[in-house]
Length: 422
Image (cartoon, rainbow, N blue to C red; front, side):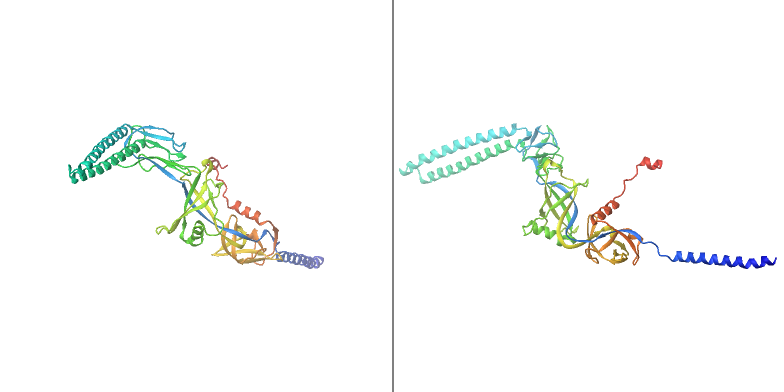
C-alpha cells in the first residue's frame, strides 16, 4: 500500500511533462507561417499602341443603280436569271415596241410634211423678190412670205425633234444593263403594264458590292457591281472629336498616312482586304447623337454582299510608350482598380492603377505602373498586401492568351446530355 502511494506522484509527474512537451510542439506548429503562395507573374511592357475604335455597321453596294421602265407599255420578255452577273449593255427586258414604232413613223411623216410646206413658202419668197423690184408686189407681201418661211423652218425643227424623241422612246423599249454587276430578283413579268403614271422600277443594279437588290415598290429591280463594297456605321458624338475629326481630316487629304479600316464579319473572320475612308457626314444626328461614316473595301470574288452586318475597326491614333499588362492582372473593387506588384524580395504590393483601352487580352494603364515591373497574372486571389509569394515568370503574350481563353465561355451541353445527366 505504501509503495503504491509513492509511485503515484512519479507517474503523475511524467504525465505532466509529456503533456507540457506536446502542448509546446502544438503551439510552435500553430505559430509557423504558411508557405508562400504559388503564383504566375509577368513583366509589364511599354509599347507604342494603336488606339482603335470599333462599331457595328451595315454593308451596301458601292453604287446601287435602279433599273426603271422609262416608257409606258406591256412587258414582253425578261432576259436574265435572277441573282446572276450581267454585263454592261446586256439586254434585260423588252417592252412592246409597236406603239413606239408607229409614233416614230408618224413623227417622220410630220417632218416630211413640214419640209414640204417650208419648200413652198421658200418659193414664195423667191418669186416675190424680183416682183417687188418691179413694184408688181408690195414690200409687205414679201416680208410676210419671209416671216412664213422662218416660222416653217421652226416647224421643221420641231418635227425633227419629235422624231428624235420617238426614236429615244423606241430605244427605251429595250432595257439594258447600265454596268457590270449582280442583278437582283425581278418584280415584273411578261404581260405587266410598266411605266404607267410614274417611273416603274424593274430591278436594281448595284455597282460595287455588288449586293442584294432591295425592292422599293411592287415592280423593282436593282443591279450592283461587285468590285467594291461600302460599310456604313455611326460613331457616338462622344468619340467624334478624337476619331471622326481625325478621319475627316484624313479623308480631306491632310498629311499623314491614310486610316486603315478592318471589317470583321458576322462569323468572326476578318475581311482580307483593308478599307479606306470614303465619307464622313457633315453633321451629327441630333436624334441619336451619332455621326455617319463610310469606308470602302475591295471585294474581289463577291465575298461580301449588301445588307450584311459587320464590325468595323480603325486605328484612330497611336499612344506612345503605353504600359501594358494582361486584363486578368487588374482587379476592380468598389470602383478602384489595382494590380498586385511582386517586389524584388517576392513580397506583394497592391498598387492602384488607371486602366484605359483594352486591346485583345491586354489593357493599357495610364498611371500606377511602370514598364518592367512584375505583376501577378494568375493566383491573385491567394495573396494580400505584404504576403510572400513563390512566383513563376511567364511571357506577357502567353498570359494574355490565357486571359482570353478563360473569358471564352465553354460550349453549352446538349439537351439530351442534360436530360440524361451526361
